[in-house]
Image 1 (cartoon, helix red, strand yellow):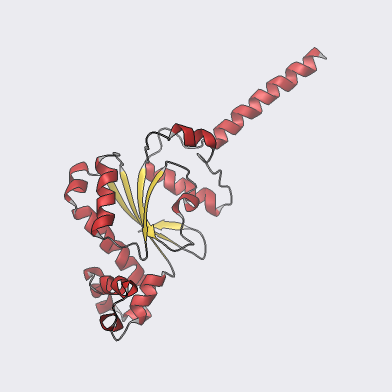
Image 2 (image 1 turned 30 degrees about the horizontal axis):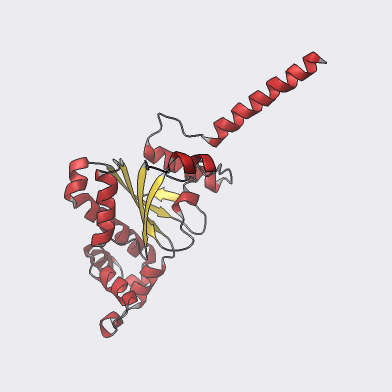
Length: 220
């Protein structure tokens, strides 16, 4: 009887240790970009472990934050970085707007993360089927100039991007959705790269694209 109880106790401890290992699968020697890539791999394989999403994490982070990456991405409801990269509370410093564009406020947020939070990785995450890019492509007649809505501001910003203009020289924009999406990602990445504070702190800067059809994120 005693042997049975002892065996059950040992088994319980072993299972508990395994659960703890599963709950925190990120190896200490993993680079930030590797953490994101492996997290997305878990997501697309339907093996997400949802780390750092409990009350313990809330209490641990209540007085300060230590994210390991900045993610600039789109406001699209299908593009949630914490879900797609299988991360949790306090892991990612996320900045979102329609079209993953860069305004002064967005750049200020990036500067804060790099300078004050010492983040070592910045990711610009665009995605397929982006509504902001589709609006830009559909605006063949420059209708944004005839209106005063903030949506038109997004389209106008895209139209002024050098990378978008160069991409359109290769192929008409209404025939090149993916090219326009990639050009917009490149534009935001280039702006971040040129920022003085970013240059001083030299974090790794990565361009990525999420496929809303497959769940997979690729590095560009």
